Image (cartoon, rainbow over all chains, first blue to last red):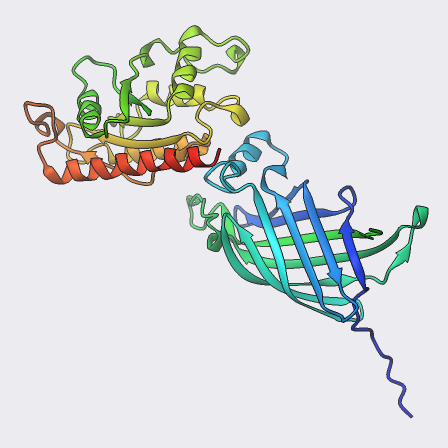
Length: 185
Length: 183
């Protein structure tokens, strides 16, 4: 007799929209070779749409100018043409091509666009089952993480260090933590 | 279209002023080069003075704001940018999120009496301008042995240098076109 426990591969049907206050988009990058520097984008929107047939798509966007770091001078520099060039490229965008779920585990493949340069990425993370919350709102939680090479997206600024190495690494870890509410419309 | 040309040296016989005038002759009819000659009047940057900056600072920021693009011609002093020029960049970089230099298209050229044509100073000025948020053209024009680099009519003696200068100006003006289209 089989005792295998089945894990769901089904995504929750419906349209799920991010709660701005309780969702976040963060980045982390090696700084001065030795440490990890973190920052975030405050303005983000994400929608997960799952049809009755199981077809699903995740679309997310981040306002480039909403980048937040602890120093205002660095924040301004990150918005300048040296980095995100927010005047010309106000949005970072992700559109999924496939979403696979195995229990709590989630693998999302899609296209990430930064500074008008689009490259495929694979993000891994978790998803929860729907849960009824205050006021009867049905919510799910979703986390995703991926590592990108920032230089592929035109984020090339760097500074050499006196004894070798560079101020900022090329690889950047992107993390989103989304609280998504079922859209009642 | 208004290009603000700033020579990095102050003397009346400045070779970089001559270089800017050579650049002016290469601009298309719809663009004009205005020479900024006020660097000497700009006081040393002092954060304590930011609340009420000197008139010369306000004028400098106004000139930058009124320009569609910036063209700097810098000499090289002790392997770097002249202090007065760096000081002016520092003033125009503040306050950082609304700075006059922010997103402003900018190009750097340079002349020196030596054999390297202020190439280090140009690199350092590009770095400073980019750090201040300007949209910097990643090109250089090192005019070496500059006392002998100009024809009597003010044009550059070496045709190749004229071509490079024309290319840099074209890239600079193209940046202003892209920027205008964004609005």
